[in-house]
Image 1 (tube, helix red, strand yellow):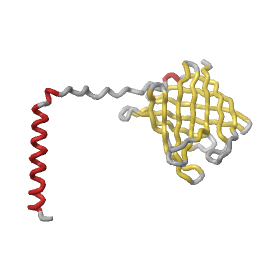
Image 2 (spheres, rainbow, N blue to C red):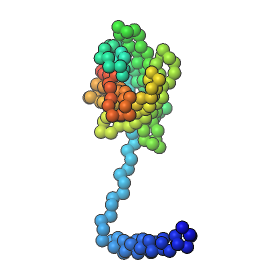
Image 3 (cartoon, helix red, strand yellow):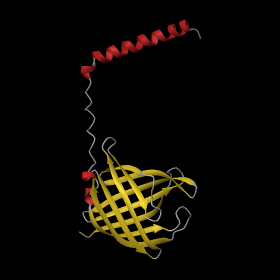
Image 4 (cartoon, helix red, strand yellow):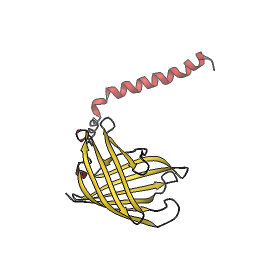
Length: 195
């Protein structure tokens, strides 16, 4: 199509659009004005409730995404302390069970621009930080997601933090190998405050 033909077709639409905009502006005072968007909440203190020393009861699925229902159980201690002036915290977990000794840590970092947390986990046996799970708290429940590789297959990971009460916190991790249509719970930890 030639440029002049396109211009002739476009002009009526342009004039109609301008006319509608002018009419809308003339009647703008008649319509209710939408309130400004709500201020984004600062989640920097979302994990403050978890600072301290905790007794941890941990269960993990022995073979996730295999159809197995065998769980391994551990008991231990979790210590959580503030770092970076409260903009982050460091979690250290030491636990023992029938399957052996477990040590892990998580560095939780708050991003003030996105208002989200990154949970950066490392198991002492590998000495490598896993890909961070990113998310936030809503109505007292934290939900964090990432994509990882498990047994050569890309999976989704969901990590949930539930504050049961002032002295009890529950953590749940689930895997999905079908793009998030279904989730298999594979890690449950319950922290009970010691001090």
